[in-house]
Image (cartoon, rainbow, N blue to C red; front, side, top):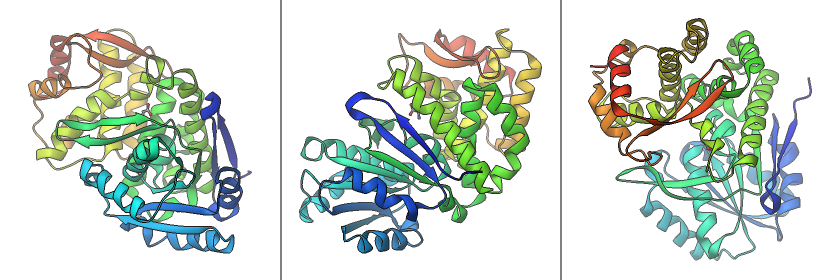
Length: 371
Ligand code: GLY
């Protein structure tokens, strides 16, 4: 099987290519040479990534006589802050960055979101490239132009839609990730199947263990199918006025659970929360007679077999329905004091359900074991 896949995302003058492969060395210069207007780039990465992939990337750029400045930030969600944004911009200005220079975001979703937002505002916008190094960022955050930082009031509250000039996703970079991080990213892969691709769902059922063991051919197919689906959705609705919201399947419940467990509980990774949230969306769809019990069980079993908690008892935390409702009430996607949820008419048939009231959600949560 060919270990390369290019996906073009058509957004008029903001169009770009997503290159999926297993050897960034072979593609980096080719991609860069089509984008950069002078041989100088600024790489922003974090301490975890700097050790293993940065030296190889620097060598390619040195060999091609591209001047490289590197900024290494601390890892973790705390870097998505106003303070870090200001610090990064000051550092870039001190390094004499100019309008025609290109920023490279080398890392996971935190780096991608922070660097993308920086690129969108420095000099009113400069070019940037995403080189995602986690499965989660390869299949989701590096594609589609959502950039943001967090506020005390919630995650991703300040940001911009700002598309990169290219995305290079090298699946061989994933080998150093802890298995739990792989599983977390893989939950977003399942999301694409559940929201709009039953054939992909069946393929995942047969190939999930190989993907999670990082079989390269399977990973290239899983990442490229996910990116292809995201590209087509973003082309139709770049700024999430409508159908892009389908990508939030599992996220409304997932974010609320993430918020609770990460603020005063045992902690949970984003994809784990999304996986759990997808189970809730499927169960609620079933209670509303939209989706059959056997399809709900298929979804839950796939998520469970990947190693993600699917039942509240496995979260080892006392989750109260009222607390979840109170977190939902602060959701930036809420309209007229009611929640918008992504529900399912079946596997591969997600739709946007506006106007779900808090009582309906509360009764549902109590029925699946929330207190
Ligand atoms: N992560 C969801 C989106 O990009 O719309």
